[in-house]
Length: 147
Image (cartoon, rainbow, N blue to C red; front, side):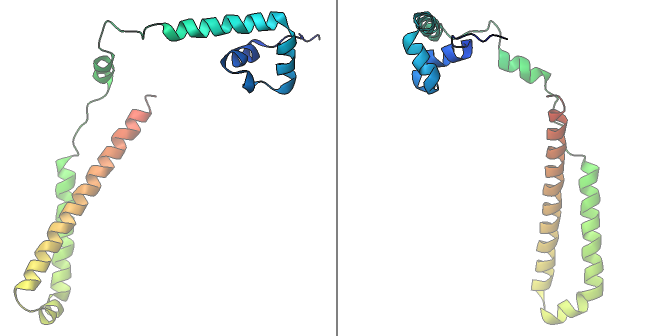
């Protein structure tokens, strides 16, 4: 198997971009080889001409075309949110039934009811956010299967 003493096409293209990219042996060959120097000059001219070309313009809206092919987002099922809210309310009611007397003695009056109401609202809100994150995660996973 014989090897060419000249630089490969890849090395010539790298030299056209910057001669500093070449290893020392290839740079030494380039300095002494008129054929390789001529090919590097040709690549530099080609790269310069390509850089001056105008950016391609499509005759259609590429963004709209791609977006039209993406699946539509569907909101999370409302029955799931209602089920989680009912579960949270059930847990709060059971907790209040079991420990309501202790809580009433510890904190008398309106603050107990207000705290329980705020806790319930916070729990329902957190559950809803968790379900929405889960729905977004599933949508993203479905999109990944298309790539």
